[in-house]
Image (cartoon, rainbow, N blue to C red):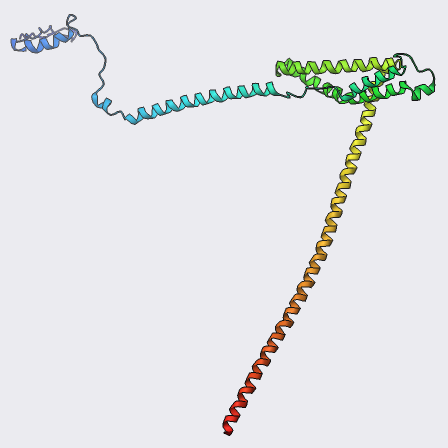
Length: 310
C-alpha cells in the first residue's frame, strides 16, 4: 500500500494524489466472488415473483369461504324467485286480459223481436200491406196498423238496454284495442255485438217506415223516453214495495214486542200465584206438623199421671 504527499498550491488549495485500490488477498477471493456473482449478467437469475409465507396462507379462516358461498347461493335464489314471480305476474296479466269481461258482449236479441214478426204475419193475413197508410182513422186506431205500431214500439223499447250497453262500452273498447290491452277474442266479440245491435237499429227503422212513413227518424227517441218512464215506474214500484215490506216488518216486530210483554206479565202473574199457593201449602204442612206434635205430647203426659196415682 503506497502513500503520497499532498501538494499545497500558492492559492491555498491542495492537490491530493489518487490512492491505488487495495490489493485483495487470495483469502478474500471467495467472498468477492460471492458478491460479484450476483452482479454478473451471465449468472443473473430470472424474477419469479414474491412468495406468500406459509403462515399467511394458513391464517385464512375457512368460515370466510363458507360465508361467501352462502351469500352467493342466496343471491342466486333471490334472482330465481324474482324471475319466477315476474313470469307468473306476466302470465296472470295475460290471463286477465284474455278472460276480461268474457261474457260482457255475449248479447242476444230480446224475445220481443220474434214476437214482432209473429204479429206481422198475422197482420198480413188480415190484409195489412207494408208501406200503405190506413184507409180511415178508425182503422188507424183499431186495425192492424195500430197493432203493428205497438208491437214495433215494444220491440224497440226492449232493444234499448242493448243499444245503451254497446254505446257505453264503445269508447273503452276502442281505447283498449288501440293500446293492445284486450285480446283478439274479446275484440271480435265486441265487434260481433256492435254489428248485431247496428243491424237491429237499422231494421227497426226500416220497419217503422213501412208502418208509418217518416217514423224512423223519431222512433228510437220515443222508445228511449218510454223506456225511461217504464224504468222510473219500476223503480217507484220497487221502492214502494220495499217500504211496504219494511212497514210490515216493523208492525210485526211491534206486535211481537207487545205479545212478548203480555206473555211476560202472564208468566209473572202465574209465578206469583204458584209462589202464593206454595206458601199456603207450606204453612198448612207446618200447622199440621205442629198439631201432630202437640197431640203426641198430651197423650204422653196423661199416661205419666196415671202411673203416679198407682
